[in-house]
Length: 373
Ligand SMILES: Cc1cc2nc3c(=O)[nH]c(=O)nc-3n(C[C@H](O)[C@H](O)[C@H](O)COP(=O)(O)O)c2cc1C
Image (cartoon, rainbow, N blue to C red):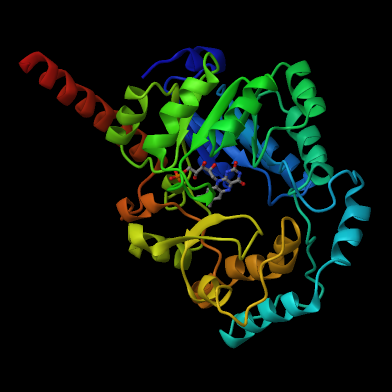
């Protein structure tokens, strides 16, 4: 499974793990893969704390940080985070706030304690992601910065390269991959529709080879629907330089997901996810529940664009995490279709070991077919 990207990053196997949990980042990198910390939910100060913790627990291994700077969003151009938040807040209709609040109160999800205020606008914009980038680049072991939802702006690509790190970005369409290549990115992640989180409409098996062809010679990581080593072998057979996984890490022992959320994920089948704009404003794959159904009803307000819808739902997202046991019917549970293959809690080390064993079994199976021909 050793590909040139392993050499570039100093890792043993090209298994990339996207996660919001620092423990998972450190454990994956220590197990020979490459942990990537999703920064979107952290203030720059919190991100600084998370990266320092990872630095202390990851040994000599590298890791990555993932930002979300969409190619298109409301308020683009305003680079002062406080001004932008104020400007955006004025654009949110009261109807949306009331609809979201009522869904949570109708389901008995407790309110956050008085005085426990949180920013409504986190890393969904260039203004808010730039201070996150500053924090990430201050940490030597951060060897890769990835961006979701678009090609990172040229000045950001230059800054990352200037700091001697690699830049990657996700895509769900061929033309997005071409744009990433033209922008000089080092690595492109092709995510098929089955993937968790923001995702497009093209299935992995169809998307991956087209992106690989369009991006060449830029290496491509295959994402969306990978839960076993045989699926990794399929991606490598198509020419991927490695795999980028997300859902797989939500239910590991080291994950910070609340137990009620883990139970929902372990119980879910591959048919239980839906692409919905109801939490963030862009199509995002998550567990279908009464919240996602409610936003589809004819009397529901149409979800706003990004980042406005995310500002409307930030309170719900925080409450769904804090009061996970009460919130499951309306909780934010982003996950891919691969959730149907995830049925038990395992340690990161066990998941990594199993992936490698299954990969070897799958490649041997193929070789035995060739040998028999
Ligand atoms: C809970 C969750 C949150 C995610 N958030 C982000 C994100 O903030 N940034 C990003 O680049 N990708 C995000 N993704 C997508 C992952 O990076 C990855 O591409 C995807 O999970 C791969 O598909 P899989 O879920 O089938 O493994 C998220 C995925 C999940 C499951």
